[in-house]
Image 1 (spheres, one colour):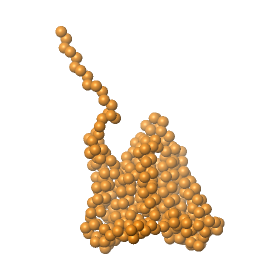
Image 2 (cartoon, one colour):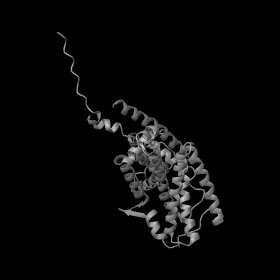
Image 3 (cartoon, one colour):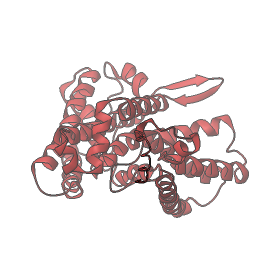
Length: 349
């Protein structure tokens, strides 16, 4: 009599398996940045007496928002597996276009703002098309754009204005209303908050919704995880990358208008080096250099860490020369912590 064959356990779709809250938490890319943000906050709360004042926290949020407005779209681009080294100077380009077009054409300031939006988005399209239609990596292409924009910013400003800065447009029609949109101050409970904080929060919400609730978000992660595999399953890789570069350009436009309407005039040499700060904020927030992993919330927290550190050193009355040291240390620690969190998350799957 033959032995009975062993019963085969029923197959279960792994997508239907319940995941514990702890495992979900360990899998979040922004976990390491949250831990880092809490540590930085407690550090300066102890060593900087004025850090916990409401006005000081408002200053920290403002500094964070000026970085975060760009860090969020840069993070989406990095999740898609690409870089944009022209992001810093693009902010200045956007401001220069608005200012010089309005001044030279004696048009309503809002006309210059609209022209700036179109031309800044065109720069994003240029980066995306050059990347998808040629062989060089995004590092080389956007480095070329960075150099071209740096030269154009200085060259056109000196050609039109005769100096390295733009002319004042504060007395032109539309300036006050544009300032209300891009550079106003909101007073809440006796504390002044810059409107850039609202722009920053809005971008976080929109970017998170795109990543987690839309088909485009799936495309972004798929392209960053493996371009060939994504294309094989029907993902429009080229359109996705061009759209991501346009997202960075849109963030540069918002930041550029804030720069213009905060100070009225723009120095043509500003913005150089800021692209690294945006990338650092995204990496601190959990984005991988290799793409396919990260979140908009993490990048926002990375910008918050940057803001707390830059202003916390001032509130603690330390030598600001040490800021870059702290920033570099945070980058290394965040990278190591994010790598550890990701390994633990993969081990618990």
